[in-house]
Length: 575
Image (cartoon, rainbow, N blue to C red; front, side, top):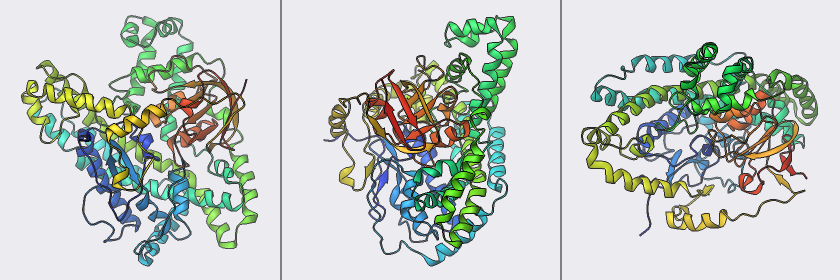
């Protein structure tokens, strides 16, 4: 008998094509029942509501409330490419291919095949109205302010962490209602950001130079996902001026905050770092997962990035790298305009002006949706800790393998009864975590069994490294070129060998990785597309970036010198 994951979805025959593209950045790991029941299920509803507001959703698109846009297959989250393509099919002037470029840059997705019911005159009319308004944006849209209010409200409702188990559990169970409107706002702004940036991508392709889109989009300024890096950099510059604090950093980040408590000179640093955690502590790797690490509960993650920044001998300020940002945008626009028709020019110019606002909106609403997770994560970890004191498992990820609605309440009352269940599921979690899920799934038969995935993984683990002189091709991300020593980093908390001026090579990155971007000469990731967070943040920090370099972390040898061309989308191995 095949070994299934704890929760498993079913491929929808109307919308069969699913992909790890884009979602692999935000859900890189095996999903727990905790996050599936409390996060993904309301996330599906929120996504549909966002598309209803946009005009994309038709009443007969889905036959049930079961998740379709956000699928769970073989333990991993997938996005439904078939349905997301409707954003291109039903949006006037767009296409299914434009959505592929924006969201799912890696690989060769199955070609779009039109079906009855795909097109909708009324949907197109409503979308056109919304998109025209988006293209005329001259300031941040209203959903940004609303998202800030939603996050603040939920934080204010969190009970004190010394409240009863039942109070904390009730608050945890209220998370879906708080998450729904915040995630809806994020998906609405993401959809409009994709349409606007897709206009620029289509224009670049029409001009015969697809890479020009990296210049056209450029840096937007004041993007939340990049703000973490710049805030940490300001702290790093202060650390450089504190000999005793520097000395403690040299001894390692483990236990650093405790050691600094007894250092008089460290008072200012500790205050600065405390303020950073208060503002940005909700972020961390895999930050949609409720059981995951954050800078709030695992400050060593932020301290590691700070440690890498403080040893830089050159100015890491993004403003230095972005001095020619606007001139590159204008130059790229001049190249594109002669290839466009009259109406296309009008749309292009509007997209060029509004793109920065929608890039900011997308990242701001995402940040606030993640912020809504913070009080739920704090309450959840308090419950895990209490149960551990009564003989339960102390690992938040292991406890998250219990059903949060039916099993977790009983576990809190009787932890011993679930020890063997958690242990067995933990072993299963480890096995699923060791395999690489297929990038595309189009039929139920393509959802691999665990045993088949483990068999395929053995061949993936024996990939031959690239040779000196080889050129690895990916997708253009953030413009510019740089040369540096490749450092393979699989976890942002394990970057001890990564030094300023190195090229960061990672399997994927979400905004929690971005403090490591600032000291990097360039960024290379295995997966990604135009709307990837790796690209968005790299642009804001003025760092060359290439995404969708298949197998980069396996093929690029550790320590080899590489030349990264973010405009061409290439990585060349040097001597």
